[in-house]
Image (cartoon, rainbow, N blue to C red; front, top):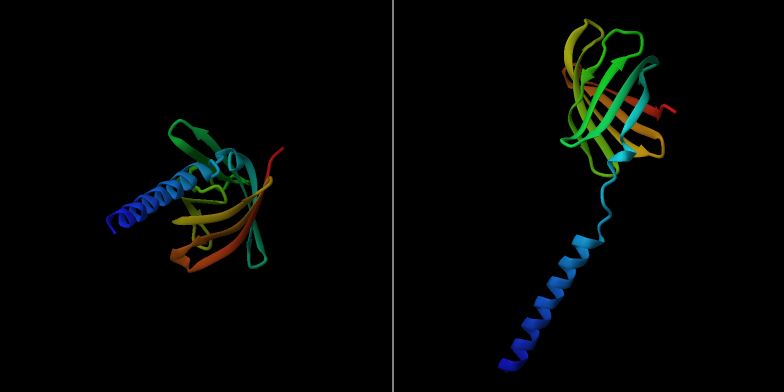
Length: 138
């Protein structure tokens, strides 16, 4: 009986070790370069369109970036809380927003595709969420 329990225990330990090994080494490494670059964003706020330029860089400290409004309304605002999980890119920034030009926290979430981002941006203070797309500058 002890021999059977010992074999079962060894089998279970080997199974758990093998599963852990496959999970650790079977995962694809994150490629932040999919999110890195210069991007042209188009924001559709219920038929009103806004155009932004965004730059994301991969540094030793992680992803860093800035965002600007195309006509100069705001320029080179730092992106914060940048997270890229290999598929989704999330970040925040504080910018003056319509209708009253108050500075508000803007949150963004995009699905990263080949040279394209699709998602949304939101200003929770206004209760506003708008669709956004971006294309990588060539």
